[in-house]
Image (cartoon, rainbow, N blue to C red; front, top):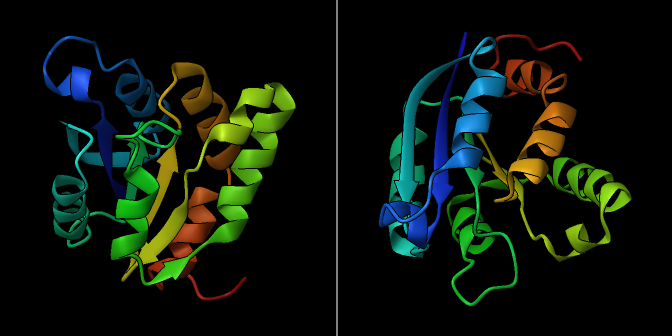
Length: 157
């Protein structure tokens, strides 16, 4: 099983003022296919997110973030993710964006990215439970193949 980490970016969630519904949904959707080795809620702070991404890339094959991808002043997830990336994976980002736009026009405002750092795939999911469910349901069938290639467990395409 591939190892996965889940990071929720939410100031109010970090302060205990809001339940982490999106993180819970991610865990529920991936737990049959992935070993979840970490789940954490962080405030919307780039320094903390960057440090955790770098740390978790040492043990995780996949890191899924939720939240912080919108237009708010404190929405820093894509920028922090790109700052630790070695390669951007625009096909995943664009695929999620197109899927979401078909469901709701407000998805055009989401800025999540997908990147590679060493042998770890990092994907920013929206913060809403609906957005997480739709995007992750779309991605789940391709993640094993992507991780097979990324981790050199399977080299044929």
